Length: 151
Image 1: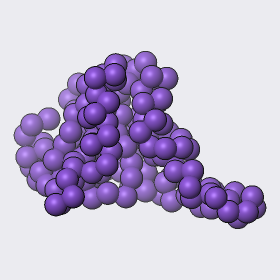
Image 2: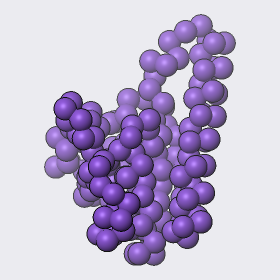
Image 3: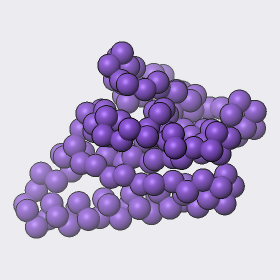
Image 4: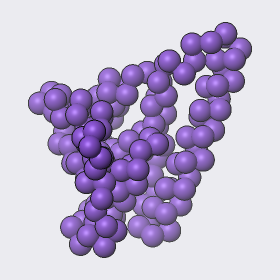
């Protein structure tokens, strides 16, 4: 089964990327893998404090994921899987794509602010020639109705 890989982060555009991935998966009988990357700089503290912070980060990710997962299950009949990795976001995304042969499309949300589409979109489009799969970039300001019409 082909999976759509979508990145879960704290950006506003993440919502549209999640919606798009779930809708496409539902229409193509595919799956959704939700990847969240915990940056290593969050744990540059004493060992005990770092472990507590790591666990708290995982709990936040699980809670955030469950909101999207419930919507995907209830509205799109798609049961997403959660993958949590630690490291720098772009290398971890690239590693996940290479390690999971079922991933067929990387879905990213693009920011709409003056700062541009966001660091992940900028960095991954630079590397798109070396990825073994296509990237779909979903504009962050598309309405839910427009997303439904194009998926």
